Structures are given as structure tokens and as C-alpha cells.
Image (tube, rainbow, N blue to C red; front, side):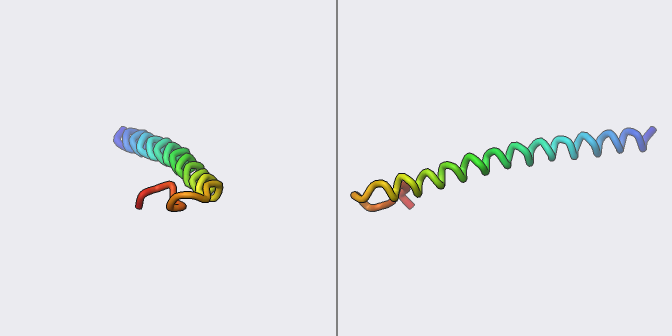
Length: 55
């Protein structure tokens, strides 16, 4: 009985981790798109300081 509970708990933890990793991949993809768009908009505008961020 204890082994069954441990296996189910392990499956629940790994399933939750898999979901979190999947969500993190989508967030990373969105950040990559914003980063690439920043390069596109910076290259399009010749005036100003030439940067779209203030770091």
C-alpha cells in the first residue's frame, strides 16, 4: 500500500513538473519573439539613440 502511494505521489510530482516546464517553454518562446521584434524595430528606426530599451 505504501509503495502504491509513493508511486502515485511520484507520478503527481513529475506530472506537475512536466506541466511547469511546458509553461516555461511557452514563456521563453514569447520572450524570444519580443526580443526579435525589438531588433526589427530598432533596425527600422534610424533616429534617436538606436535602442528600444533603457538599459
